[in-house]
Image (tube, rainbow, N blue to C red):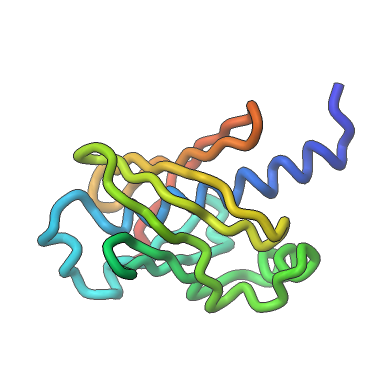
Length: 145
């Protein structure tokens, strides 16, 4: 049986690890899609508590928080990251399959970086997956605009 604090910490870590995969979704799987307007690259997590805009950064993709609700901002501040909006959460996302991407995500709640993946289901949906130790979790992200 796990302690309650360990479970909450793991859930927080996984929440942000899954956001890593979001960065890849915004890329889409073709070079032409990378040319889409920035507004097409904003995605939200299932709780609609964080919106991330992903775009090119060097030879890979990065994701910046463009909106967060008060709870997400407070969780981030408690973890040592007082300014969640504007934070570059995702970096180094690269294509590993025709519809899958892999990269790193910074978890502001924990002040740590983890690896995540995303599989693109269609233009408006993607499944993000992240693991910490032996605990893995998936979420479906949705395009905001």
